[in-house]
Structures are given as C-alpha cells and as structure tokens.
Amino acid sequence: MDPIRNPYAPGAGQRPPELAGREEQISTFDVVVARIAKGRPERSIVLIGLRGVGKTVLLNTLRSGAVRAHWGTGKFEARPDQRLRRPLASALHTAVRELGHPQDDDVDHVLGVIKSFAQRDVDPKAKLRDRWNPGIDAPAVTGRADSGDIEIDLVELLTDVGGLAADVGKGVAIFIDEMQDLDPEDVSALCAACHEMSQSSLPVIVVGAGLPHLPAVLSASKSYSERLFRYARIDRLPKEAAFRALQGPAQEEDAEFTDEALEAMYAATGGYPYFIQAYGAGVWDLAPASPITVDDVKVAMPEAEAELAVGFFGSRYERATPGEREYLRAMADAATAIAEAAAADETGETPGLDDIESVPTSKVAEVLGRKPQSLSPARDSLMKKGLVYSGERGRIAFTVPHFGRYLRSVGGE
Image (cartoon, rainbow, N blue to C red; front, side):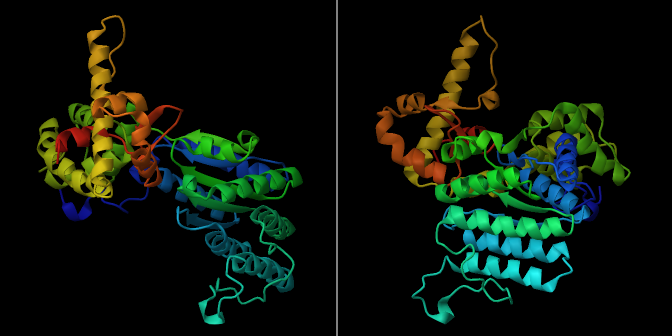
C-alpha cells in the first residue's frame, strides 16, 4: 500500500474513523439546534467517555454542525491550573463575531461586557503592561459581569450574549473539552448559568466533553445538574461500526480487508477509535497489496503496539512519579487477580482483563500490602493528572483503555 496515501494517518480522509457509529449523537445535536432555533428550551450536552474514544473529534464535528446552522461558536480546553474567565471570554469573543449581528453598537456593548468579564480576573493593582488583553477593541462595560462573583458574572454575561443571538434568530454554542478539569467554583457557576439560560429560553448552550466521572463532578456542584444536561456516553465501537471505520477509509483508496483481517483488527483494538486509527495506519503501511489479510495484521501489530507504547501509553506513564507508577501497576495486578478469581468460579461469566472497568481501592492496597488511607496521596495525584478516575466511591479505574495491558507488558520497569 502507498504510505503517502495512508487514509488512517491523523487528519487523513473526509470522515475520520472516530465518527463511525456516532450518528446518534450527531443527530441528537442537530435536533437540539433545531429546537432552540424555534425558541424552545433545551438542555446542554455532555459527552463522557475514556480517552481514545473520539470525544474531541466528535466535539469538533458538533461544532461544525452549529457553524452550518449559522450559530456563533467558540471552543476551549479546560485545564486544572486555569480559571474559567480568560478561556471562556476568548471563546465567546469568537462566537459573537460569528453571529454577524448587523448593529455595531449592540455588538460592541456585548464585546465590552465580555472584556469586563475577562479583566475581572486581573489583579486591580497590576501594572497596565501586566494585564491580560483579550484582544477586544470595544471598551469594557463597567458594572456588568464584573462583580467578582463568578456565578453572578457568568449569568449576566451569557444573558447578554444570548440576547444578541436571539436578535438575529441564531444561537451560541460553547464547546468545552476536558470539562472535568474546570475549577469546582467555575463548574458551579456554569451550571447556574445553564439553568438561567434554560429558564429564560435564551439560545445559549454548552457542549462539554470529559471523562466518565464528569456527571459526578457536575452533580457535586449543583444538585439539579442532572436536569441541565443531556449525557451521552461515548464508548468503544460495536463490531459492525468498527468494521465500517476500517473499511470506509480503505475503500476510498480502492482497497479492502478480508473478513478474517477485520476480525483480527477488532480483537487487537477492542473497538476503540484511537486504536482503530493507530492499527489501521500501521497495517496500511506494511500490507503489500489489497485485500489486507490476517497475516498482514499479524505482521503490523508489533510495530503499531510499539508506537502506542511510546506515544499513547508511555507518554502518560512517564508523567507519574515512582510511587504513582507503583499504584498504577497495583491496579493492573488487582484486575488480574479479579479476573483469575472469576475464572476459578465456574458459576459465573469470566470477564477478560480489558473488560474489568474498575477495581476496589481496597484491592489495590491489598496488592501493595498497605493501608488504603496511606495510598490516598498517590491516588489523588493520579486523578489530578487525568490518569485514573473514580466513578463510584471505593473504586478506581484507568482513564485510558488497555492501560492495564500496557503496564503488564512493561512489568517492573
């Protein structure tokens, strides 16, 4: 196969493999946009799932759908070390410019409110040269969205942005990736603002994406958060959708997989879109001709796995301290022990190692011969680094699919 025309390389093709099997989420978003365009209240949307399932690609696709509907859009990625004001102000600045409102005075007023909202994040004693400039030419509007209370300010800000959008019969959608990394105070304010937008029937929605515990993060901030968002779980692809993700790009290059090769690819990737793309790229580069066979897959697997070990798994593993790596390996060992115990119990179904979604923290402590309380610092640090998450009390899981498999392969390194 021609490696220059590799349809699985990042950015290749018209329809990335990650979008196969995501038609339901795209259709749901289109319905939300249409309902809001008719002045009907709708909930914001939150995509949740592990890393590697294509949340960011889907988020970008939904944004493209909003742009096609002539909405104003903006996007940012939340970071644990950054508060909400600056990235949100930049996103809203972009969204307001996209709206194409004909009245310059009205636009300048809202841009001034955005500027005021952003600059409230600056120390009032800071010198002018040290103050962050959001790149907005309009003068800041004093007394609007600048109280210093993030909840009050955000409600006022989105109310003004929503009013501007309503004037031209359009909407505004703010897309937030890694939403679980927002500061708790900012999460609470965002929930309050979404609630106000819904109550006022203003055409502003948030479309967020984050790890599986994001609903718990939102619920902890506001008890009514479950009424504010449509939660869409983005998971591994079922076999039929995974086959389409593999066959589609190949067929665009007049190539195809044999049935046995497709089965082998699904077994290797587990149906996770990131792995489908990675293994697909590796097989394409090494397969001599079409159709791609199961032998081609076997030849390409070591190279694809080696690349994943460095770029996908290894880069995350390297971020952990020695003590944190010990905790990660203990999680993998705990999953192995659980799988072996299930295999010894002939009365139940035996789960595969990669099918065990979480392990008890007590089991991890048992593997390490430590008290669970003594491991809290390592666990909490790993959660802050986005390597593990806790979907329910007393249990812990990897944020990356097949990470346990990788840890078992590197052993005690």
